[in-house]
Image (cartoon, rainbow over all chains, first blue to last red; front, side, top):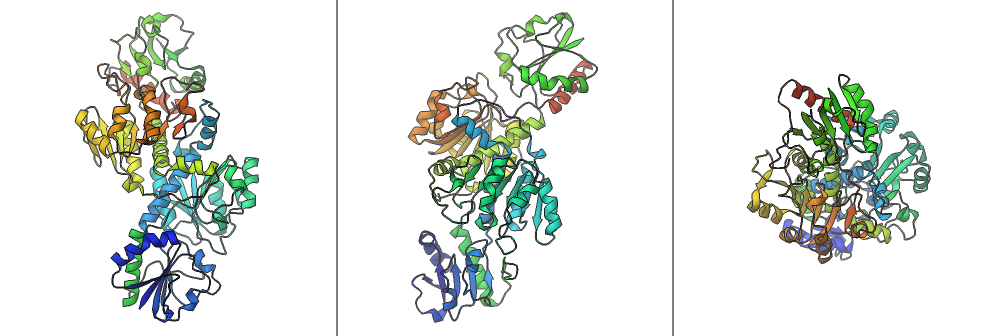
Length: 309
Length: 309
């Protein structure tokens, strides 16, 4: 019985020593050194090459190394009968909430304007309201969205969350479905996307959605690049319908040199760093999932392929 | 009986209608229209011209329009026998905590580096730890410091506070005095200055203090420009002893064009906007103080001139 590990070379180098330490009972194979595929029962994978998982005849469980599983669904040969877990790691959740809090605060406090003023050596106070007067809406109100919501609330922001299916979350106004989305958008001066990327959410951040936000609203996309219709963003910024955007994810990553997002004065670009996988905590979580699965116990964060998360 | 109001012309324009509405029982004089000085009993002032307060023979109470009173102490003729209140307004406290949270998060999350990478269109993930691994120290642990501390703690940062006199604050490690300062500095990867400006704190942010921080620590100064020995900052940044600084206050404001802080790549400059006075809430607070004072009741936030706050 062996576990196949596949991620980027840099990530693999960070994981390798931890896996030996935290899961000493298992034999690990590090892609591309697959060895005999017949005795691989588990796969820990990020962006596996198409066909890799289908080539493992004894595979019993796929452990995705990210909060989303869109990196797995890109594989047309993904063996859909095999259970998949996605990675829900409180350390990554905290990191994501830090990124969201920083991004929301910077948009709220007119940081793009103050950065421009600094470049121009211009000393000019701008009118500023407090967080309690700046409603924030969060698209995707699961583990990540609720944690970010709690921290934004501690900073004083009124926070509402939207999710596909109705949820009651103590201390928050929540919305669901199509009508709920309208209601959430109408009240959100800052909109944060933390959705999973599915066929239902692909391209959700588009001109039509921007038009339903209050004029001058701002956007944070820390979900996936596929949520944003990239061609719609700059016109919305240039017209003033949106006042700014903070983007951590893109249709093509790395964001190509010369892409207009890099140099737009109302866009902050970061290189998909909102919540990096953290091997010391993630290895323990996945190790536990594999142990439970092997014993036939319930496993957390199993993916429903019908919804895509 | 009348109240003299004196602030900047822009601030006066914002205050004037609110005062008539919230304190209709009083006659207001708006500097420089002082009228008969003999019937002015109260003064609401920001940076009063030297000698103004001494020229009011019936003055009974000075209400400073800021959290600090250094703007009053600049007046060599300040009538020191007259009680002074400083402005402690929860709305301004919240605004300050927003500024501190934004500044600490941006330093923690390597925002200066990511902004530079965006300008260079360079996609490069940097190693990042979580807030729980980034101890923050707050110099000045009164109303402002404790509120900022609570919000930083909600974001995950381990927070310690330092004040002149020993304080016990539930949920925080606190330090006081000279030995306490050493201990706080040794553990603070991000240092936030929210001190009052007094003879004891003038120039406290200097090369000697920077050297006692962990190498690569970062600084937020939202206290007063006089806390920082400006000539010491850039050498500390250029040597790597400090990794970044966010400054809202300066020795000379507006910060003069050509000042090296404007263009230094490791410094964020904002134009003294961390916590602007907010007339709707402040007028109610000062109105209440004047009513209590007139009735001989205890008044909050009276200044002790011996300590300077």
